[in-house]
Amino acid sequence: MNAVARHGVSIALTCRAFEISETCYRYSPVLSDENEEFSDWLERLTADKRSWGFGLCFLYLRNAQGYGWNHKMVYRIYCEMELNLRIKPKKRLKRDSLESLAVPEVPNDTWPMDFMADQLADGRSIHTLNVLDDFNREGQCIEVDFSLPAERVVRSLNQIIEWRGQPKAIRVDNGPEYVSGKLIEWAEKRNIRLEYSSPASRSKTPTSNATTAPFVANG
Image (cartoon, rainbow, N blue to C red):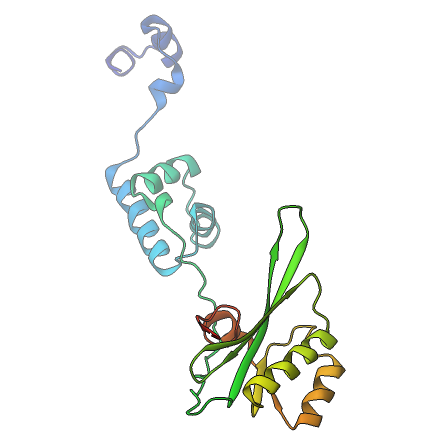
């Protein structure tokens, strides 16, 4: 103030006379070139370290570079540059490579087989056993019951074989219904090969099992 510079009046007395605080009198705004330095640093850090937020950027400037900048001031510049609105990149999940399934050229080459489940209005659960023919996606069997143990699965397969003939292979997943010793023993006696679909193909290819693939109902 002119009173302090010209008349040598104390800052405290001058501030009381003009009814302003000494903090306001002593405040000196940040120079624009210092703001520019903030911006340059923040722009470089966020470009090189995309996963860093304001906290890591500020700690780096204070501890690694030795700047004594006020964190509120730096955060204001950070927000003015809209760096607080950056979207962190999502981690890309590594997917297993898919193995394409060969389409049979004749019927009864490969039968995909799997279960589906549903619930009745009274809360009871039901299960369905679905068996298809990979050659034409024709439905060989849809067995429905409250429980479908391995013995029931074997009985249904024997009935289909009586009607349609025996397949060379049956493709199943690794569910508990299919890894039972009874089914493996039945397949060995019949000289039928059991093929297990991979987890990747079960989750991504709708034609890899009988549950989700479209099929033609057996007339």
